[in-house]
Length: 185
Image (tube, rainbow, N blue to C red; front, side, top):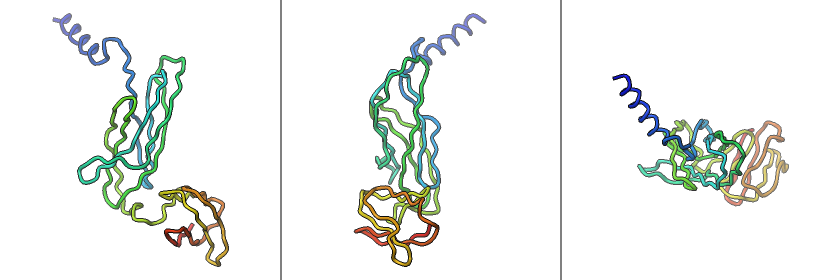
C-alpha cells in the first residue's frame, strides 16, 4: 500500500512539473498598484532570451480593454539555468470607485496575470492635471508653459512628462493648447 501511495505521488509530481522538463513560460509576480495608478510587477523567465509584449488591460463594462501603459522589449540570453527576473512599472488612469486590471503577455507566450484592483476616492481620467512624484503626466506630447502666480515663466517646453521637482512649493498655472489649469505643488 505504501508503495502505491509513493508511486501515485511521484506520478502527480511528474505531471505537474512536466516530467522533468523546465517550464519556460514566463510568469508574472509581485504585482502591485499604488493610489496614483502606478503598477509594478516582476516577470520570471528562463534566461534563454526572448522578445516580449506586455499590455495592461482594464475591466470596463464587463469587457477587458487594452489601455495605455504596456511594455515591449527584448530580454537578452544569459548563461544561467536558473530563473531570472525583470521588473517593470506602468502608469494607468483610473476613475472614482473600483478599478480592475490585469497584465497580459501577448508575445511570445499568451499569459494573463491574476486580476488586481485600485479602489479610489478620486479620478485621474477626468481631464484634470495628473501629478505624481513631482512629475506631471500628459496624455500626449504637448507644448506647455508653467507660470507662477505673478505671471513669470517657471518652466517651458514640449514633452509628455514634466519634472517639476525644481519648482519651489506654491501655486502655478499650467498652460497648453488644450487647457489652463491651476495647481499647487
